[in-house]
Length: 131
View (cartoon, rainbow, N blue to C red):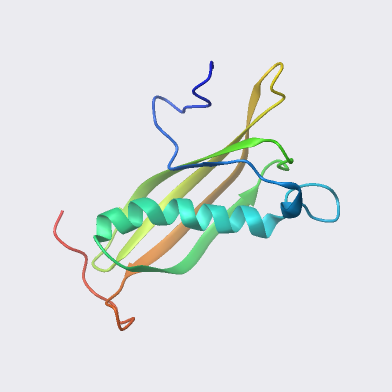
């Protein structure tokens, strides 16, 4: 694994972050809402690039917490566009945590799917530009 962190089949994460103590819930794990917000940011990156402009989240199609995330984990978010419509873009997110720096282990912690719609400055829908 080395110093470059976790990679999935040669893909680079769109976002990598380390949660802090302020992000914990009452059980000492990272709050699910924090994870959801980070996933929304990560999924929006390829959607914005594809839309070449402003987008809005219109749906969280699925969200699965597989394992808890802890303070100090290095959390990597991988995004893949899985569907492109006339105005909408659907993105799958896979989230992995790298933990235990002395003997690093990588575990899949979350998977989700978001749908975005391309919008004009006034918030109305717009068609996606040609690819």
